[in-house]
Image (cartoon, rainbow, N blue to C red; front, side, top):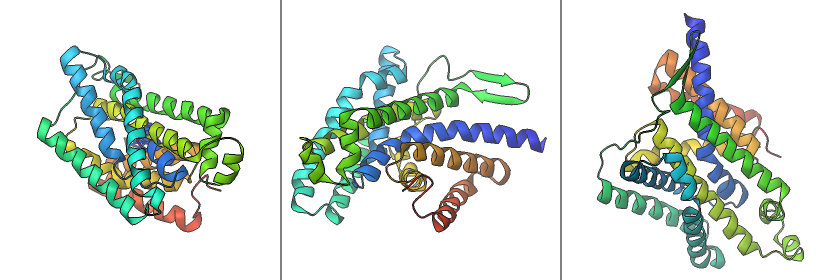
Length: 289
């Protein structure tokens, strides 16, 4: 019985890790590559959840399909937010403390707006696969976890291909290292940063839909992920999307095993303790340079 519980906990943790990777990839770009501490990213994820909810309840559209359709809108939103951030803080060299306060304000403004419109009741979506569970012997694989895991890993994989195989992607990876060299390659660092930040926010559209597939949401749910996404980003190694996936999987498994055998309340403490131990022996993170 204990072995069966352990195997199911590991499976659940891996599925959860795929979702965590989707939630964290935007932070890996904005914080890990651009060095922008966007603590408002979980608020954009919740915004994506509510857009998926509206389309699902009003038109019966699958939440993940809604997220894909909404990608251009989130991209434009991200570009606009970066332009305000750049003009107000980064251009003046005040992007440290004041920039952080800007994203704090953005987080709470977004949350309050969602509360005013939707209230504090939990909202959920309906889809054929949400209630289905795949039973293999003693193993249970719920599709409400499997689908977000697969979609999350697919998104991260496509972003990794974009960053490593295209000129724009390589420019994004280089912008935080040597802006002068980037200018010599006829690339505008500000435009590159705006594009990268817009992509980071666009990922919140997908992550938000995946979140509301897994669980009902209300406006303040995003706060639960602020510490977790930064922990995964640092644990995986800055500027490393594969490291983000590995770290997300590790934390997902650690949290799942802890919740199964010791209770859900211990899961965050154990996962962050695991982070501290890893950074004590590997400060650069798992795949950091």
